[in-house]
Image 1 (cartoon, rainbow, N blue to C red):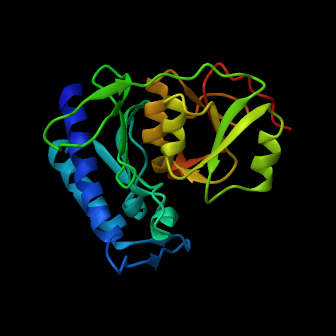
Image 2: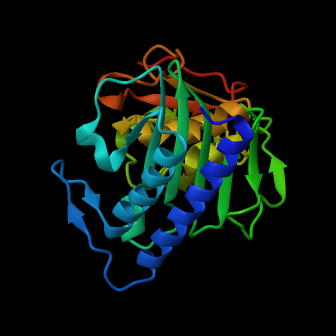
Length: 267
């Protein structure tokens, strides 16, 4: 097991290397778009980023189980401790050449994402947990060999009558809107991928409800960043903390929030 300082350096380096590969495809004429068995899209960038991150993690952490989206068919039963990766979260946004896609790497221990990094290469934003578990945003330009200036993430002070809600760009539906409308909302923000967790962690939004299918690799890194800033991710049905290492790595509906936001009960 890597010590926490070395883990932060490793996650940063691999996320930045993967981000460079992704942007090379993003700026090219041919993204190599194909469909998976479940009809979700995959691109040449997904595969390149997965190769970079998987090779790096296996070289430095050979004793830790690795779970990645692009190798999902090979995953066995979850271990108590595992690394979980979405090499390109927000593939639909990527294909549309929108900037809301991210590289996600996280460490899960006993069902809890304890460390993670979310890097949005097209937006130049990077969020991660430090060696002590606190969440930071690093201010670019980014050097893979050395961390630059950082700022500690702080949750907002929400106004219950004017909450700032962030929701998905590609997966918004009537059920989500109906739930959001049960709150006093002052502003709605739209974002793709795991950036939604980071906006809550950075105090740029108050909560993010997700009433749709997600997998653990979609959420673990953003969940770690939000937890490190004092936020939480709860199951939608019973408001208990979201756990990781579930059968098939599939999540239930959930709510990511600033704990100062009072939740309404599901109908």
